[in-house]
Length: 340
Image (cartoon, rainbow, N blue to C red; front, side, top):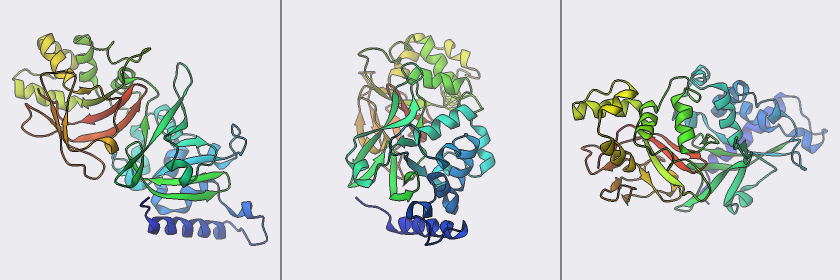
């Protein structure tokens, strides 16, 4: 497993510095000399956004204490760096205000699991339950362990460093914020459309299109229903499509100016019945969407994302927010509508 040893050594140095700064001495018990998993975020400048997020999301106190729901009293935390938050445009603590607090709390809970899972255990886990639960059956929303070119990923996020020990658990460092809604694909889109994720509504045009084309049932989780990879165009992507078509799409209801079968075909061109793939599982080449008369093309994997284009696109779409875990697949938000 390729692990950035320099990052690991910097983390270890930061923890030692924290122990010294908080007055720990060699005469204390060994476990007293370790910071908590919450203090790990405080100890290194590269995790200031995680610290601010934990405070705003209301999980800092819980991660400063023993885990009451695990016999060991420990947590495993997958900790995004400042650069990971910056990928979402969250550069400064005040930028976190663009997220609704309940959504931020759920995102943070998705980074945490009960018990201590070291590097070896993570590598062999396959799936790792999180503290985030589905709203209906209260089942734990899992994180997926993926191997790509001998490097390990949690969903689409690369593991940069492992096994940072804390008094109440263990921390692993990752390069992307893990996103999960606890809802299915349709419910996740509605969450963003209703500004329950980001304070600014998003995917409003997509939700309107799905309802207009009578595709909500197909993308809603039910007994025996498949899981999908979905490329979800932003609201601006639909507005840009209106310019191309010569049909102004200024508000979501304008989608209904287009023929229903055309809208349905365009939407089906964004859905792959492949069980739901994270970026770490996608490779350059061709994908077969539900629109059987079409195909999609993925470009080269670079910095954790891949461009994607339809047959009718002059330019490929970029992944704006990749790797959103839903209960029936994975959603990648893109900046263009994929045309058949």
